[in-house]
Amino acid sequence: MANIQSLRGMNDILGSDSELFTYFVENASRIAKNYGFTYIETPILEETALFKRSVGESSDIVNKEMYQFIDKGENDVCLRPEGTAGVVRSFVENKFDRAGGTYRWYYYGPMFRYERPQKGRLREFHQFGCEVFGVSSVYEDANIIMMIKDILDFFKIGFKLELNSLGDQNCMPAYREKLVNYLTDIKEDLCEDCNRRIETNPIRVLDCKNENCQKLLYNAPKITNNLCEKCDTDFEKLKEILDFNDVEYEINTNLVRGLDYYSQTAFEFTSNEIGAQSAIAGGGRYDRLVEFLGGRVTPGIGFAIGIERLLELVKMQEDEKDVIYLGALCEDALNILTKIASKKRKDSKTFIEYSVRGFGKHFNLAEKQGANIVALIGENEIKDGTIFIKDLKTKEDKTIKLEDF
Ligand code: HAM
Image (cartoon, rainbow, N blue to C red):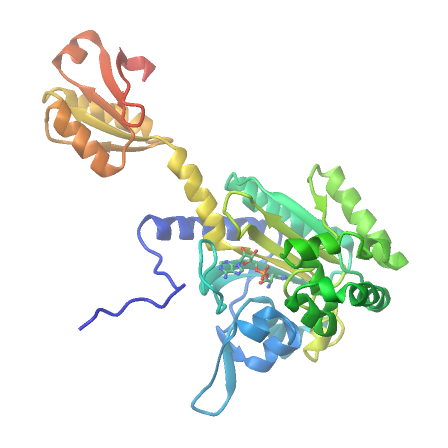
């Protein structure tokens, strides 16, 4: 009988990966708490209508990627493809919209999208996200962006921040009309997807990945040139706050995000080190979402980080770090090795082999442990106060003073 395997695009998290995973969640949670956020957990399974009304019926997520089914009670349900909708549902259900005030919540957990799996793109993946309710000030937009930067800086992850404003209900409709007119004129040269989107969601045409479409869109009207006074002032202020705090960003007027609930600020943190799936985190303002889900008008803003993508980058750094193997060529060396290990372990992964072996055997064992530096001590080294070092990658070896190691 064939063994049962996990589903395509769905992974177990174990060993060193699970250690990194919990390390990430602990530290991201700590930073979120410092920004005044408290933990919220919502169900993984929700009514399908929730995502249709929030993420949007024309989005790929809802249209093509939902794990949707009818349960035993004939309810149309689906595994959450993202975290914001459930949090907003909870906000309204628990009547926080009626109570007024400010709420800052963070969450983490699995999300499900039936996408074509590839490196950095899974069907079950994990997000760490934050949502803020009741704050319309653009200072909060800056606050959120700075918090993501704090998290990425903590994990020493290089990134590019792309920023856009999507306008609001005052300026977006007029802009959409302008854009549709432009797109209709070049319709025949645009790809099939874009043609479909002109009707259903013209803004999404702007982030088509097809090179030919991108060329044709070069002269398309830009949302940032068509903002109403409020959106324009807010966007300028946001840029000013980020400049003041030395947060670097690029304006990308084609950044529209794959979820329909955004207005005004939209942003994405990307890295060019993880291949095509370059977005590590994304988010923005959603001042109308509470209302779309039946609540009282309440401003909202949030983001989510893709944990697997972020950890891919952390692992790349780990790969660059030395892993040290310490071996004894005589019994007396072992005590010295324990002292060296306790120093080296302050910042490097370090193994000690407790059995006395020859050079060749130590090199083999070191390789098996994944070490790249082998350090050995025998009688001669003890006598001279030295240590033998071999770099297994470059194959170079040398004997150096113990205090220089
Ligand atoms: P999103 O941009 O769809 O936004 O997802 C956020 C992050 O989740 C992405 O930047 C990416 O790192 C990760 N991600 C998305 N899809 C996959 C996948 N198939 N495999 C691995 N990682 C993936 C949202 O979900 C919004 N709810 C964010 C938000 C919160 N906006 C406001 N509040």
